[in-house]
Length: 211
Image (cartoon, rainbow, N blue to C red; front, side, top):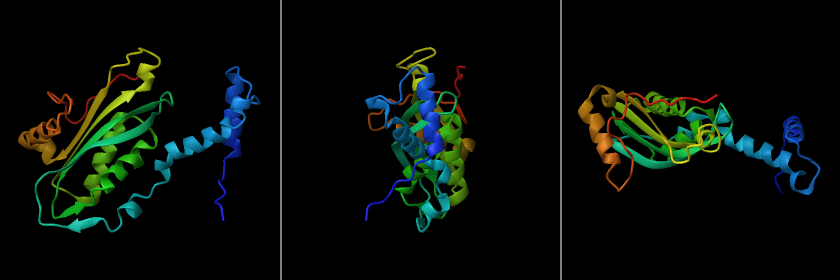
């Protein structure tokens, strides 16, 4: 039996009204189904609000005698800027030093998705990813670096298409021990990546949010 999708009619009415305010005709062929499509897309892009992190992590924490750095790098993320409701996207790199427990590797990209699929600031998202990993597995340290391209800067405002933003969050050993922090940043540069980590701020680099 096919699954019936449930749509939010009040949201569709708002989107239809928005099209009218923009000078469009929501009854023309190309726009008739746009309110429904946008409703569905926005619910997916903000699905992180409904995600249950504990349920997602269930059964994926393992006791392991390993205390060296674990890095999952080049995790793609797509999010929405809360100021202009325009996308920002890029790569996220996550590292932690286990303290008796490790997390299933596939769960780290899922954690990134949960916080990316919200109306966000890159700075906040970076901190949230680090803090939830720190809370759930209590490692010796957590480090998160995100590189993002923001369409609110590329399509409008300053219109700088080649700019990108780097944010970082360092907790525990990564914050307290410069040697550990630099080892992580050097490892990010291995695999031919173009991440510019020289002088990366701790805990995070911020950028101006244009009005």
